[in-house]
Each structure stands twice: as structure tokens, then as C-alpha cells.
Image (cartoon, rainbow, N blue to C red):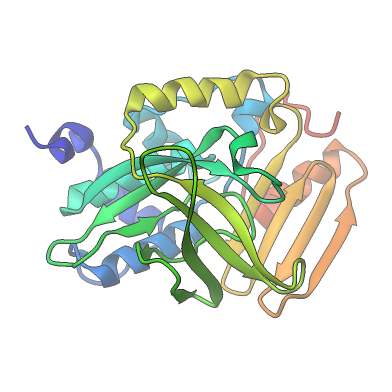
Length: 283
């Protein structure tokens, strides 16, 4: 049985397409569809870690992801949830998807000091000469808005952002790729986002990583709210008690929230998220 058949059995593709606001004809397995679906997903479904903040590792079962991220409407998730759901949608359309893990290296002096905790996707398009790096779950202002071909040293403009992939030397037998974002406002140039090899990972691998990130008391996702929302003209981030807005022109504004009540109001109005009852956001 093909991988896609095993992965997408029972998956409600129509409900997913409705959730991301897909309009027009049913999408096909081509580059335009891949670009359009990634951008639509990122603008429709917020990034959030409320389950981890509550001390629970979120389920990565497709039925549970559909209930939470698709039919729930007022919730989101973090990388394992987003990219597991996105991979299922792509496979249902006929794309071939390899699930990868990456080291988040923003601000790192040595890539090896960061564990592999991020999930990304390598997507093969029928008839295309090379696969694409796709990712709807990177919770950062340097995230890809559209997938990019797996090509080194080429600058890509994805929905207004600038990215490139480079290869760097490392000790392993596989090539190490690094996604870089151009961040003129903060670094004055190219900033490494995450590093990855092309080794495929399985659902059991993500179950372990997901549990670790959600429940380890040293994990940033288990200690403070980290929530983002993307619109056509801005990136909105709640990090702890700070709300940071980054406009497409690079303008950054920041304000501090005073208490839980204000945080709940902001998440409801600006992020489109309903906070579960009883969850403390600002400790």
C-alpha cells in the first residue's frame, strides 16, 4: 500500500480546504497548488502551544488534528500538528511527502548544540526536477511563507519574504542544509533559521519529540505562551507577556500585557484563539 494511502485514510480533504479558505477548483498536485496551500494554511491556522502550556502533549492522530485545527476553527497548534496535517492534505492530492526533522538554530553559535526538535517537509511534485522544502509550522517571523525548491545558494522571494538554502559542512554522512531568512531589521543580513538533513522520520519519532517538547519543564513551550498569527500585512507574536507586531515594511512594535484577562482578550480578538477554561497564561 502506498504511503499516502496509509496516511490519509479517512482524512477529510474538503473540510481542510474549507478551513484554509481555498476557493475555486479542486487543487491539483502541482507547484502552484503547493505554494497556494502553504500560504493559505499559514494565514488561516494560528501557531500556538496552549496544550503544552497546560502540561499535555497534543495528539498527532489525524482525527484529533482535524477536530482541533480544522473543525475547531478557534484553535491552532505547533509544528508537529501543523505539518502532520499539511502532509496528509498534500498526500491526499497526490504529492509525495518525506517528513524531516531540523535543528532550530536562530541565534546559535554552533548548530550541533541545538537538538532536532522541528518538523519540516520535503515535497515531490510529479514531473518536477527537484523536491521542495515546505513548512507551515515554524513559529518565527523568519518562517517560509511559500515552499522553495531544494536548491543551494539561490535567493527566493516567497510572498514578500526573502529566503535561501545553503549547504554547510558537518560530521555526518548526509548533506546538511540550512534555511536562511533575510532579516535586515534585526541582523542586517542573512540569518540561519534551521538546519536539516534529508533523512526521513516516522510518526513514532515525532511522538517522542512531541512529548519531550510539550512536557519537559525546561522546554520553552511548556513554560510560557508562544503564539503567532500571520495576516497579509503583518506577523503577530505573543511571547510570554509581550505582543510583538512585525509589519511587512520591517516596522516592529511591542507592548506588554498586564494580566491573564487582557491576554485572553488579545488572543480572542487579534489571534482568533479561544483559550481553554482554567489555563493560566501569565504566571
